Image (cartoon, rainbow, N blue to C red):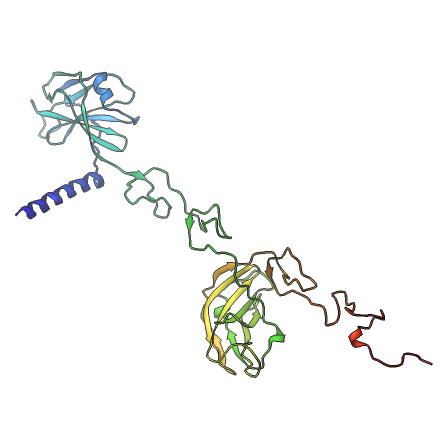
Length: 378
């Protein structure tokens, strides 16, 4: 029995609380003249106790049935009077307070509604006068929640029923300053934050050919699902062991065919894709590298056709500038941070200026290439 009573009380309190916050009906100001009224004097003591803040604040008088029978704007006033209108007995409709009816009061202050109790109660008496010289008791009843009502804004308030003009338009982007594509203008993180690439996949070089290979054709369905802006953009094939095994230029083309090279089992080490190894594809566009959802299983002498969309997603960004980072190369530049495959090396026995490393007789012929024998033409 106690549990049932507790549950009923809980439900009642919950429902009342919900109605107060979710359903707040403000009484309208009084409009009319029934020919009969009484006056309530509102002194400065009473008005000050209301703590009015809104320039449109007003006090209403209500009959016991909730009928508005009088109202008065109060903002900026120190003393005033409120007329309470009585019922016009010449009409069938009740349009005012009945004789000796107890009158209640409410204050509308901006978006909040308060119950106001006077120190001296007021009962309607035609042509009567009630002077309220003491402070009133003011109790919060409910309020209209003001806020952003635009569901697309980042500060949308699902409790707000009155838009206050505070909505902030969403600007999606990377909001983490630790990442390279941080956007200081963005106020809504869209999960696009990326860092510098730990591995930068260069194009496959012909010198890496192993003899074993398979062919992969990419149709327009795949190629048209993304766009590149760099004229040297390429698609690169990478094994599970992070080994580049093929590549193809993709700028300005609607379809492309790529050769994926397999491992040369007759040589030492692994220099290509192994049988049944999964090969993934990445798009390199300038300093941006994208991952795709496409992959193939390497099978020597086989052919695979890729027709589905790439679902390309920005994976990382090169730590620029790009250039030759090999200190042994002729065009090495310490200012470059990411290798782009452009390194140029001197031929064997020569330096980068094509001068012999060893030329003891300064005849322009490297010592290692000298031919021993008689050098006297006579």
